[in-house]
Length: 399
Image (cartoon, rainbow, N blue to C red):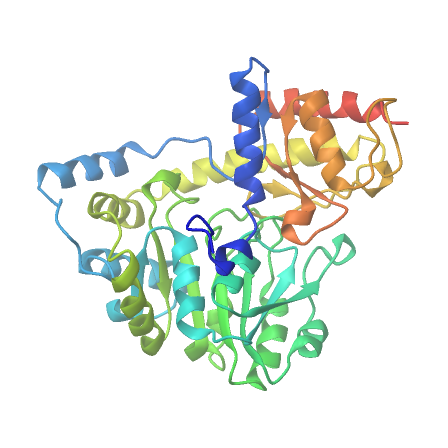
């Protein structure tokens, strides 16, 4: 064995395609190309001033020492208040574990509950990291496909058919990355009715896009009492408060799971940034109008992108009610060419658009959605119009 040989665990993991495309964009930009990057899911808004001020005040007040592993008590109390205020859900602070972003919160839950060979059901399209985190936990991802015809949402019958004696968990997001789709109360009730028959299954509900919802109140599967005691809510401040770089996520769930996540986290990151925690309190308890301002702008951008895509021959898109992504079907371009580049699949098309149109997108393959490409509209209307002008021109050259 060579000393530089990495573990089999790492060899089994794929590189994040969203981060890989962002890196390619930066490389081309450094070479002088004018790249419009629609690959990353990051709000282009800056963190609101009152939140930044709270972070600076935390420095002045010397909150620069180790925090408690599950997070400062006042932050966990703020999360409890937020849950009650926004969703009518009752938690106690000891049911909350604050982590370095929602991604770590998901890792904590899966690494704390999944044994080798356990199955974790994930509806597809899924967030790019879900199957990789399941691999890290030595679990087996069981993919349940939902295409554009059913608005990328699985049915209760599909869920029931996927459950086996080895099923340990169910992991999904609503509003969804990469589709922007949102499960309604009725749809969640139907899924909960299936879970009632299978009490061994942990439900992991990724609600990081909770606030970015254009059609009404956020619905959480935790509202159903029959399954409430085995739901782990994953959330954070990144999307709703434009705080991606502050790296604060959290898990809210049953006490046994919170204790397990705390034990695990205590051995590999200890806790999240003290400064970011104090800033997050200001976000959760401060002026919430900043959310409405961002969401109103995102809705305008959603409408712009969907309307423009719908006018391009061969592009088939739905009208997602949440998050800031569109996942159009582009299979009509398979087999076409501009005379230099031939399109065999969605990955070919994404690379074609990067090299010819200088627009960075992500292949749907990364999200379990072959035939689609993901477009993030978390940038200005001006840049979105410019990007779609380029995409439209490049696609018109494919014959």
